[in-house]
Image (cartoon, rainbow over all chains, first blue to last red; front, side, top):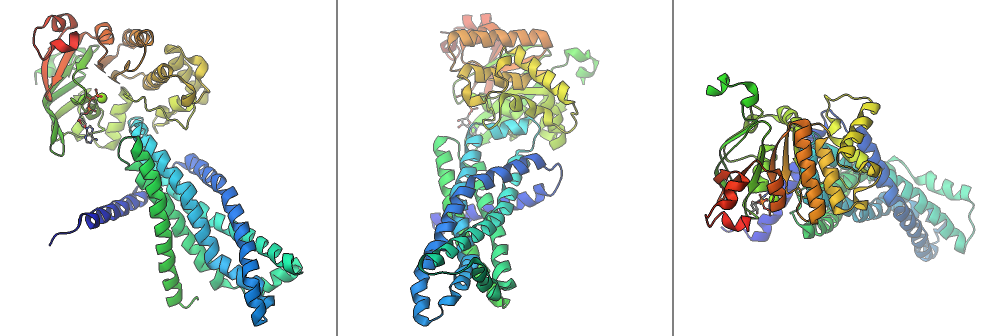
Length: 256
Length: 251
Ligand SMILES: Nc1ncnc2c1ncn2[C@@H]1O[C@H](COP(=O)(O)OP(=O)(O)OP(=O)(O)O)[C@@H](O)[C@H]1O
Ligand SMILES: [Mg+2]
């Protein structure tokens, strides 16, 4: 039997990515740790995506509220609008939208940066200079992406809920106290934690895909563009896949 | 075995025997031999794509050959583990064909990078002195806080050279140090290379197409043709050769 070329390429790519991810654990768990580079990456990654994440979150919260209002009104449960919007944001919209923006902004950035470092032999130069480039470049970025995305999601949830509060007050009147009471009365552990856990996986996949595509990009300048592009596409696909798996697991565990 | 009787400073610093490497079916080096004596400046000449960069990447351990032996400062590179490679690399400087300056770091950070090695413990004052000494050697002390993107091509080459020199290597591998530079800058770099060789008593392997640089810096030339050491001799001997494989380089 002959395996089609695309299937083979896909399998090779997934195998390469899996081995690369394994290396992050084997190499990342031993000293020396590149602490200052890690903190610098956390700052850069958070800082770069914050404005975009904040703006989209605000708009999502506002728009969602305005659009859901008529439907809830017709069922006579308008008072539950804060909780329904907040739950949708915390469970799905916040993590996925933030994750996708993160993939677009940070995944492509990492892919292009490491890709151009590879093409211009900067990675070889680090190796020759006695610094393990995998630890210095890859482990720090993957770790920073894994930790920063959950923080960004929490922030974007808060901003989106603020947007929702403003959305409610455009058409009606509700005090902020009542608004938060409405949300926290129904919101519990199972609404908040499973989505938060999946965002660590989202962050990890954005980091690992960007690093993999950049670090192993083919030589030449068009390789840089290709690795940036592929980073976004693959990371976005992985976010949806992980989302799909996460919902099955939480469902099985009865947390839904 | 006879090496043991020879005085230490006469033993070759690099000795390559039967070096072979192929990428897939594409054979690049095929039984290449080379010896670099202590203090010697050796130029490797060959067509574009003949494997010159591959050769020095094998010497520094960035590529591992399929066959053959590479002894650098008495130790076999092909058998080194990672810590041993690191030690060897701190004694051998490598100037990349593309400079390979870190473009997210300032000139100072670029030069400090080779000093990050864990067994090197220096005070900030000592580090600053080493950075300034290396920059002064290449005549660019005033660029210390600039980014590589703010420098011209010739300046970047000299900064890359300063970064290579900062650990005072015993051997320097130059990959096309003057390619793409104007004749005057190129002349300046060649002079600098000779000056460094005299000042620090380094041995060097120089890859170059620039015949003026070759004439200025070489004590001996090796012709790399078809993956082998085709011929070796001084610049004067080679330029007089009537071998059709050698002549085109000297015209
Ligand atoms: N990592 C690699 N993977 C596959 N092939 C390679 C690799 N590195 C070099 N080659 C091949 O080896 C050959 C020699 O390359 P090398 O860079 O050593 O040439 P060169 O002699 O330095 O040429 P130039 O003067 O243009 O720099 C080329 O044909 C190149 O395609
Ligand atoms: Mg080359």
